[in-house]
Amino acid sequence: MSGNTETDLSKELFLLEPEALNACVSCGLCLPYCPTYRVTGDERMSPRGRIALMRSAGTNEFHPTDEWIHSMDTCVQCRGCETACPSAVPFGELMSDTKKALASVRKLPLAVRIGLSILNKPLLLAGATFLIGTLQKLGFMRNSPYIPSGVPLLRRKFKTTYSSVEPVLFTGCVMEAWTPWVHDAALKTLDFFGVNVAISGKRVGCCGALHEHSGLRSVSVKMAENVIDGIPTTGPVLVNSAGCGAMLKEYGKLLGTEEAKRFSERVFDVHEWIAENYQLPKRTEKKERVVIQDPCHLRHVQNSHQYVREVLSPLVEIIELPDEGLCCGAGGAFSVSQKELSTEIRKLKSIALTEVTTEGEKYRVVSANPGCVTHLQAAGFEIKHPLEVVAEYLNQISESDEMDRF
Image (cartoon, rainbow, N blue to C red; front, side, top):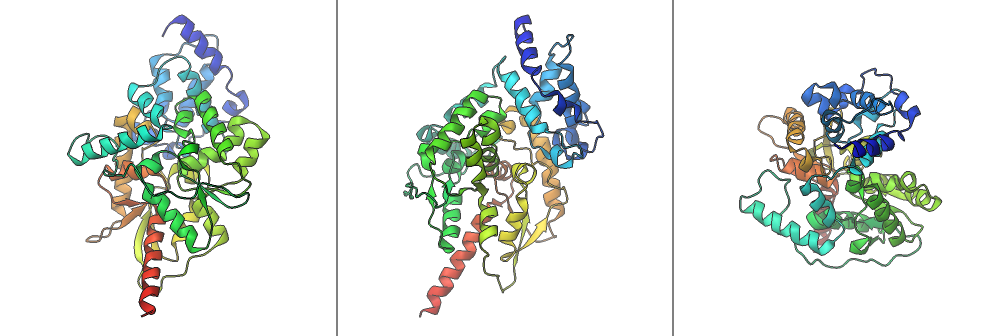
């Protein structure tokens, strides 16, 4: 790294909030909840180790070594440490600002840059999805995140005109291209309760979460502004992707405007909104046993994971994992930029999933985030979005009602 680059990086890192850095008392309670520390045992791969390195950036002797940069690059940004921290250290904000500083002085890996560049280009994303999914079906690209093949490039249109107070389902970019049936399941569930809902659609597009996690602050700000401008209503904004929901709820902090703060106050995870307003009819026959895998940004950022259980509990018997919400290793672009670490972290999740499996009986797993779903599917697990399970049950109710008419 050149001298000028070192100086630029130092200036960026000097802006880290000293009060936030000093809130960490190095107690170590975060260590069991940090996936990178769990698989490496390396303090530099832990929250308190990374904070110690961030503090060193505030000294005149600071020189960003490759080791220093690697420590920051390898953070999954799962924010499990925030849930465990008794001092309420805002680690997510510190890491986000550090990533921004790093992105200003060097380029991201090529594969990550290409991926991020197409997220807000719907036709290009749909084409790339179809191509990669087909190649995977033919046996190629086995080590890349699983992408369902055969996703249609053209789908039936949903309502995209908004009233002033009715809910809008945020459809984003990756879910629209990779798992559009999850949106169908969400709309079917909302329709069951008589909710007239529109979708944000391709015009609104990407929320900017992966760009913010990669340090591309100026890009994520523009995407946030586009989303807010593209959903000009006063009604609820419902999100069925944990990562997108966490990002939309933090637009107020990201932009710092009153408009953005008001928008974030209207954002709800779809399970959260359903659980607070409705309840599904209880299933009377024997319930299927389903394992819940909590996405980090639903559990640790939104603190809304309990609503998935409230929505599902009338329909299925819930099985909890014994890992207290440890990250699965997907981490947005992390599975691409840090493939080896991501795979090692996923092994821990695989162990937890295996532990709850009764001999001779295989359970389905549900997870409310597309990154978790595709990452775990690549390891051979059958993963569904929770609302897919709900939609299956609602189909059974509809079929039963039809039979009762004859």
